[in-house]
Length: 303
Image 1 (cartoon, rainbow, N blue to C red):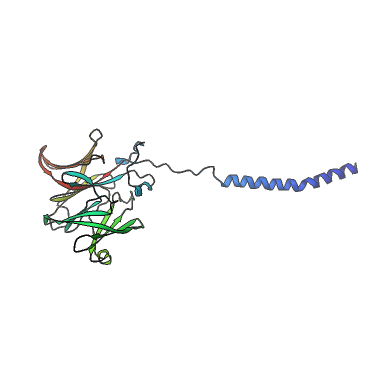
Image 2 (image 1 turned 45 degrees about the horizontal axis):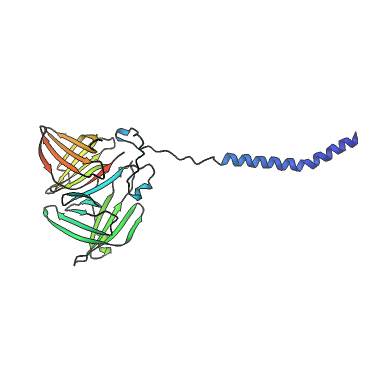
């Protein structure tokens, strides 16, 4: 019996290191399995329509610029078009400054731009220049800077700053621009002038007589602001609230209507990039009493 006990003890002592190593190995495998997720779950963002309701997802490919594609969940698209010889042409941006109106009439990707500007009190006296981009675009911290040189004899330098925060909660729905003009790049950058901008802009348009802005409040209500070129005050010459928006999918048109007693102020804008166009109407008792000629407009297409 003693020999049998002694043999069992020797077998147990021989197997004991293997049992200890196996338990340690099992604990290590169990620890690794718990700490390592099976996959990296990515949140699925849904586009939000007006009124805060979730809109249906669309399989239609987005036509957003490349620098917008990196924004997760962002589906809204900003268009700017200018009326050139009776045709709507995709442009870089429009600028409503304190005294001047200015346009960059070629797409942002172009290395050359046509700069058109006029003073608000003399809209018929326009300045047109050809500008050539110098070096590459300098981007950082959600801003980009362009240096443009005039091919005119004056050889002036134009600096453009574009801000693109893309923060929906703070109302950054459209890009914000500044323009500086000087003899050198340093001089131009030190005299930057802000283009008029509002949070949550849906439509910004420039006519031959005034600038019109349609925006949304934080609650989704529509607001209309009009700035006549001849006015001296920085306050809008007309401000209306509680506008009505209608979307016509068949006509690919979005309409914004504001009522002021017996008058209705209507802006109809194409929601299709391939068929641009805008209409600015004033009605009195349902009869059109004014239709303005639009020079340029920026439209934010929301999904």
